[in-house]
Image (cartoon, rainbow, N blue to C red; front, top):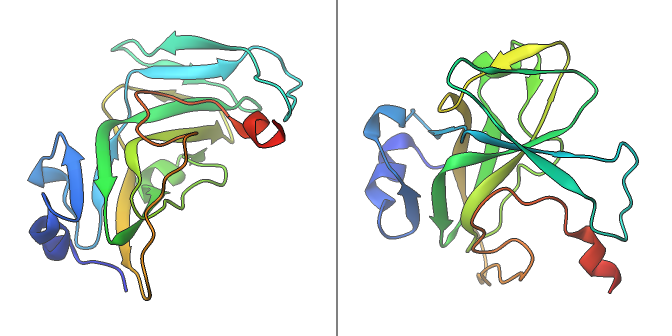
Length: 172
């Protein structure tokens, strides 16, 4: 089952933590998360799964930044989240999708016990100007049946910002 907005609000401070939290962003069955002002891009066009890939940072100015098709931009949510006893999931907002912007390539599924900022894998169908602080995606929560074992990965847990792929650690 997916939690309703009122159930999300009820579980704030216990099973759910969103900082900063603003009830204005609460929906009937989700909560809108905002885009931070940082982006990261890979500097090499050819990437290698077995090695750390070099990146560079872009700061999104208040007057916006133009995203180009054919490039992957890593962003992050402005909000820090923690989830216990529930499975958090992330989806782009429909208003964003209707502009041809994907908020995640494949990683919209979270784990019970995840703590941190969500790294967004952003791509676009056509050029689009984005702005810091825009409500870009929504988090929603599924209940879990069975014994719960919380996420304990040392790759992405308790992150402090945008995280490029750490898949290379799986080869070590």
